[in-house]
Image (cartoon, rainbow, N blue to C red; front, side, top):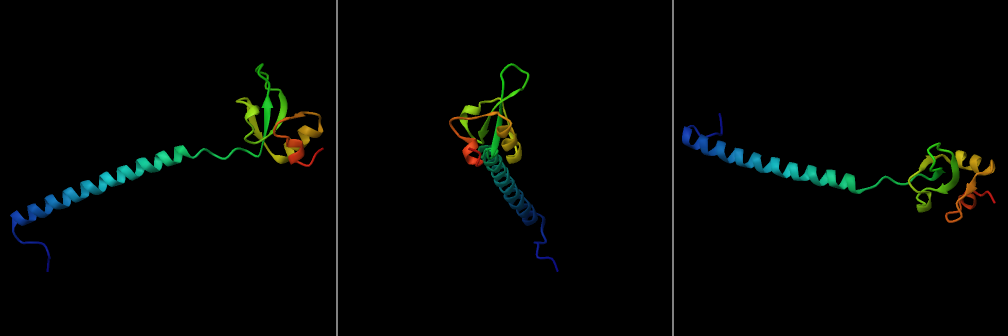
Length: 108
């Protein structure tokens, strides 16, 4: 046995109420999606552990090793692994004088 009313006027009222409720739920979903998207954009990815600063001239030659997040690395920096940072420093590449990656890596 159905729990819905048998007559058309009450069924129409119920249909209207359900449509309004569905519209409200969809609005709340849209708001929640927008807030989630804003939160995802607001959280920057963590900086890499180590970065290699590159020259300006376009050749991309490395000029210094930095601890990740060091502001002096500038825009021309690419992330590198711990092993790559150690190798670059032991091969004579300059460590940043501000963030001291050589000290962080235990190379003095």
